[in-house]
Image (cartoon, rainbow, N blue to C red; front, side, top):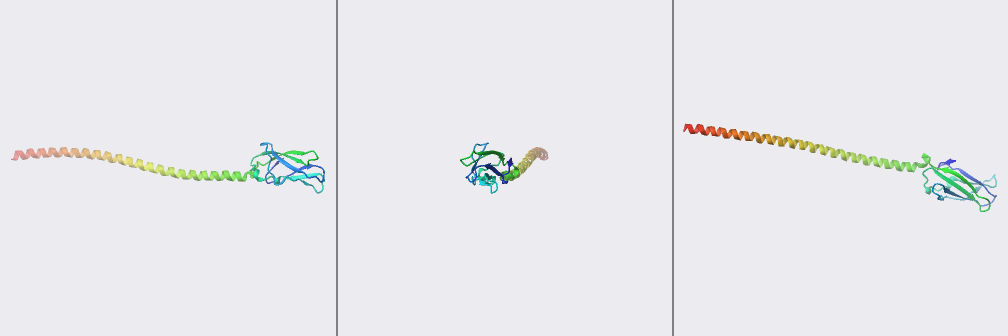
Length: 173
């Protein structure tokens, strides 16, 4: 069976009545023994020799946030051990913390992206202003060149007029 972290499923084993039965839970994926809040199995009141243990005793410090294959071994040191396999976790609601962490990371990334996008927009505006200034500068330089050409033309015409006036003045005197 597959159990959610939020389920309190009961694992059972059959042993001599009145003995102390303990359980170990191992990960088949990592070969590690899980930390349990308690490893003591409880004998059923009405069914002598039937010992039970709840998966709610799996300690959350194990940080199982994925689909995990687990094996349990119940033992009392006298009778044959009882073993079984079950799968645990991997449901979406088992991963709320992980999902929230990832969601927080995405939100942070989006905020950073928005800030960066704003800075890029400001930079683009600055570049556009520089381009406008460069265009204005080009226009000013073009105007300055035309102004100099007109100034040179006026200077030449002034010289021509002065020469003509000087010639007229020379003929009158």
